[in-house]
Length: 89
Image 1: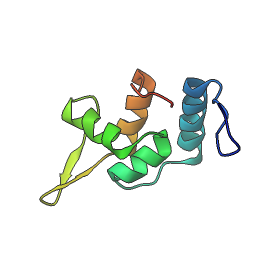
Image 2: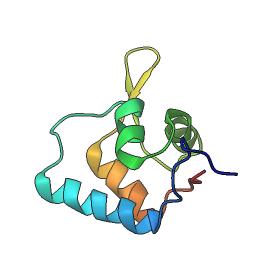
Image 3: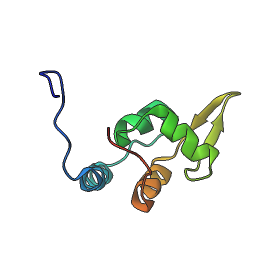
Image 4: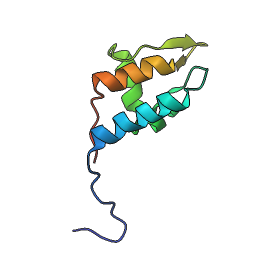
């Protein structure tokens, strides 16, 4: 049962992500490394999905300090092009 707080099911999520990536790429990526939260916000997934991707070797990352990881925008776009294993709930 849907209530007034439910969101409609998104149509063409993969196409939307690819279009946003192309738009983001054409507007110019930030000339800096991105953290997991920024990548997740851009991609439209949870931060844990980003962490799992670099633990599995699907997304390249660089150490930033003792515990942090940062991601190069080109690596994020490459991950998107190869297909992000996310689910939309």
